[in-house]
Length: 220
Image (cartoon, rainbow, N blue to C red):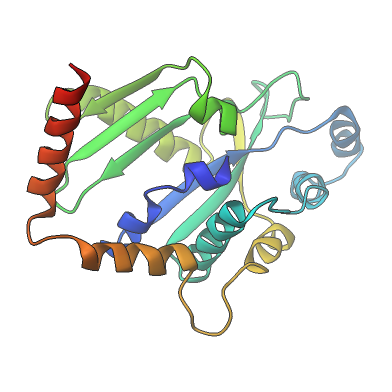
């Protein structure tokens, strides 16, 4: 799923873009009990995530993790962790999930695309399941885009009523950085993206539109 979700990130990198990401972490009853007896939330989250070290199962996943690790090291990707909480901002157990799937993409002109939907970050969610995805643009539905941006901003600033948001624990960051490419090399996926860009013709957007038109005609 990580390899699938990372598709297209190379384009953001080539355009000088940056990314912020919030991921969910649901605690079990043992962690909740420890917090109630004085343990710190950050320590509980670190222990939970450290028990699930990154272990890519194929080359594609390894290269996706390598790209994300490189982005973090370059300061191009910031990640925080959201823990579901009750109305008193006390963490709750696995019965409550931080299940938000949403995002906002802004280009250099200030135009934005926002999305939310039902799909999980799993291989089945991206390739097999029947899922919904709602997409909004500033030039057609600016109010909806603004709502999504404000929701994300509240989460990032840890001002949400439904989740406590923390910086990624250092141990988890260190686990990700294990996958950095050696020396000053670029990630393999970024190298391939640059090579592919060189192979494009002088009018890549026109060529893409023509390819889509040709494919549509073949389907009719």
